[in-house]
Length: 338
Image 1: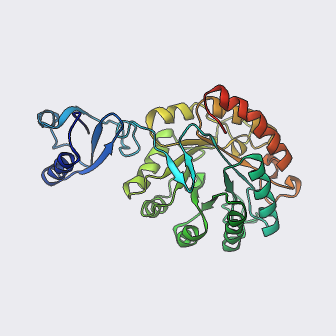
Image 2: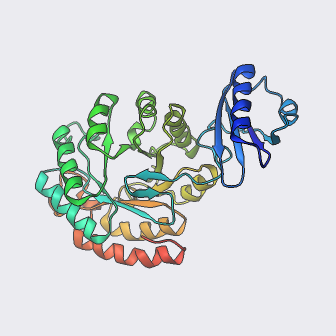
């Protein structure tokens, strides 16, 4: 349930109203002070809360019922777009954020070389996998803590904030120390115990949609994190599994505008994992920008042929630079910039 307050209601009166609601109805309140109005969201069992009684409160302009199971992530609760700060960078503005780097951290030299290259081309975040959840137990599993240290050195050298994937809650202290944005991969989107732990910290979380999960399930996973107190969440569409075999996954391009309509959280797209081929990165990136994505996650490797993972979908630094130059006019055509 949502209470839209009348214009001019003071912060003190709003806080008193929240205290009244929590005490008398046993609900949690979530207050959003928007640019136009103030909204109080009621979270929990609202079956005893009568709409008529709420409408009679002097501070309340109107009351709305929220049918969706996700509340804090719901745009009805938070009409204004959420902007997630990462150092000096903000995701969710007119600027389209580009996160680039290798699928796997392979060596310190590799990481530093690629980080310098993608920064020169205009990337704003640097990505790299240190803990790798692989389909095969015999595949490269990552350099783990050593890889995180290399990523931190890349950040110190280039100034680019670092994004890396966590695979279980036991790694959380390491990630808090070494990483600027914690990525939850597709396989862990419904690892609810991990999501609960991420809700207890303030570090931004990049939450990827599972390859067989619905949009509502993605938003419920975001709700898990937000219910713990962490609202710094970036949603990522990375392709879903369908009957089609000509691409690694099928990029659900319609998910971007649907998410933007249902939630206030920023939405980015991973064209590399969606297509599974380097030549598909550019057209899928253009499509993502055209439908309103707030950012892109692009895999870049200095030697894709010999990459320890996902070499086929990785751009070389030179190719990445060319793609960036061709994406800028697309961003400008929709009133945004890279």
